[in-house]
Image 1 (tube, rainbow, N blue to C red):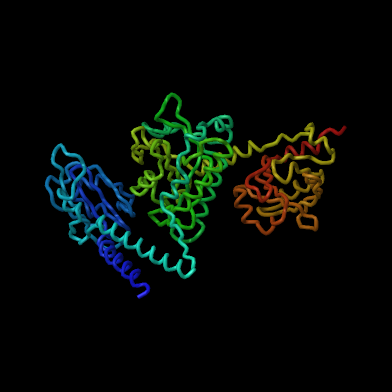
Image 2: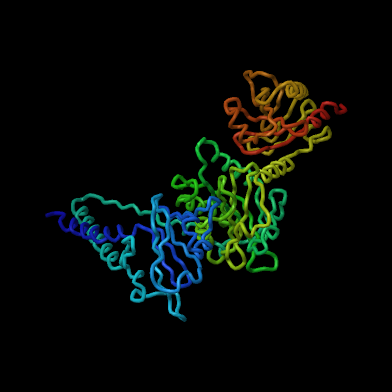
Length: 544
């Protein structure tokens, strides 16, 4: 008798909710004379163009993949369609639901001329929960309210009983969508918009004039950070490492923004940081679900950047892959776009699609038009190559880090026996090469194939590393490595030769005589670039 009231309350709640939930599992569709609305509560709803070719208005409204299929994931989809039917009734479309054959029943409930799009339960039996051909109904508001009240009573009774026995009863709040998006809400009123930090350092960004891509675009220019290009390139390359069929994947892009010159409805944006999905993301061969954790991570990043810089960092874009599928925005992609935009700045978010199975990593930049409609593949006048963007980013980084090292350099004059190469690193301010080490580098690179070919030995004084030798073997005072590789990025080299580079203070990657990249692990990227001619010039300098 002790818990009888709790048990009765829970049983009543479940008995009210269970039949309604069971009836509401399948997809439903309605047409009111202007709009076709498809609702998919769960599972996957698929269409074949050939199977519904007899219904031309629907065929024209859907966005088809290259294999003439269209897949709907859980969500609500609306399509403006004229003259689908001129009378009330039902239209049945052949489809698949959770990969099984299915027929979708479209309940046609036309509006009288001059009325709005709302329908009362009395006017529309389908809206009032009348089961269709598949026996699908709805969850009534009364049932939900009664069930929630009964559950609340049961919980209160349990709390009282636990309190009487001196035991503690803990609740953990379940995270909701509102919790996630509260963290990443737009903070435009609190932080300063603007792209001055971008425009004052043009060498650190790739600039895209999107007026060359679309006739009508709400985003005027996009500034893509060269540091981010390398990270995004590595992110998508990792998705190709296994031998299985490639799933879609993607990430969020964060940056700053400003109004385009002379406009209040067009924008310039920067893309500076990426946020990778969490372990709750669900990516398939033709679908993607970013999950909730990525929103929390993005909120933390945006708040941190805003507090440090005072700038209005926001979600300015998102990028995902279409491995071998071509470049376009599917129905599911358009839903993601609508879910991510800030209501007041709907034209500020760019959607990037990359084909990771193409040799040049083809990239499509899809922007909203000034009226909010998304540009799609038929609107594109120009595609891009992410492979080419990566090459440009690497070249820009080399130019940025290239240090003019000559015999007259003041830093070289600190010690005439060493050629000092300045580096930007938290651990080192310079690497000084002896004349012997330079000659040994020259000898090794012209007699070796790709791989780790030499080991630097030397010692560190303060924040300067003095290199005495470069030998083909490692000894007790090895401080770095010499690697020959003409194409692989520094991230790939660090992974491929991790065992040899472990514990080293630096490594040098020989590309050509005109490029020797100096890297400082575990920091990313190239810290300085020197040429063989610069080293030979130092060796052959005039001595005082």
